[in-house]
Amino acid sequence: MTTPGPRNLITDIAGLRVGNAHDEKLRSGVTVLLSEHPMIAAIDVRGGSTGTRDTHALESEGLIQEVHGLVLSGGSAFGLDAATGVQSFLREKGQGFAVGDARVPIVPQAILFDLLNGGNKDWGRRPPYQDMGFAACESAAGDFALGTVGAGYGATTFNLKGGLGSASMQMPDGITIGALAAVNAVGSVTVGGTPHFWAAPFECGTEYGGCGSPAKTPPGALAPDFKGGPGENTTLVIVATDAAMDRVMLKRLAIIAQTGLARAIYPVHSTFDGDIVFAVSTGRKPLAGPERALAVLGVHAANVTARAIARAIYEAVRFSSEPSGLPAYMDIHPGAEK
Image 1 (cartoon, rainbow, N blue to C red):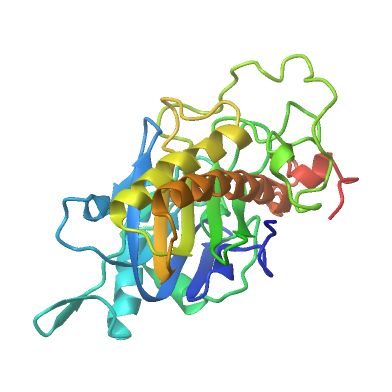
Image 2: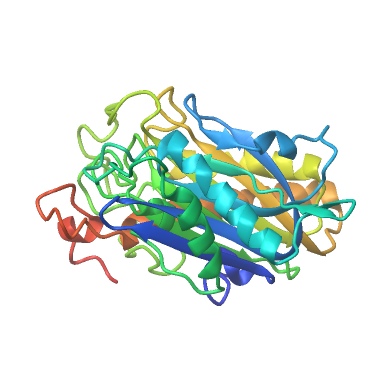
């Protein structure tokens, strides 16, 4: 039997911490995943409009086989400064890849587009993301908020406020897998205007309202509607596990986990999206029968990804400074269990 971890967060994997920082006036933010020890990581890219930093370090042919943090950020290309702040924090802690006496923290990053959400983006000469990256590290902990926080603060979807979500699952063999998602999707996470989530079949308990699936798909719910244009929409996901896996296995895990986006968002993986899945391992637990175990773990990776995406929308709140703006899920469906 599989059940969510005690927090139902990616930090149910021992040694992981998540930190968030955001700016209300800017309507943007940063989320960082940190670990007590270096992680092995890989990446799978499906969207046609991505923005990344140092993700070449995750390729299997690369020299460096460890990362020291991962960053999800708003701000489009300007937000790529956030990794510099995270590197600064880790360097002060003495963490990083050793090159002689020097330490170089390896911090891959992906960004989402939130420049047109009504926030004040007139930041002057230097974008604020480096400082937010550092602040996110300072706040990193096992418990963290979901919804309108961190990289999900300024996020939107086709019809509802976007946000940051997370979920976890404990396997019968003691292995844990979790997901962290910043959802700024071009598509919709709910089935049309109903309270039902596309990811309803994978819900654990009432983690996103317990509304289940609709008896019948309402007219228009399958229409390929999009918000924005190329480069303006992205769902960023980190899937993590404590199972010992090399980079090739993690690449496959990231590929399988992309199925979770397709289970939770409609439409998805379009030319308008910058969808990315990172997969990381803390390597604390052996993976018995790795070929079959990887296949099983991949199924759960897709499931926790779908759940994390739905929770991001379920927990989000609309911008308090714009009450007439894009509604949050609970504004439309206040009867859904909280």
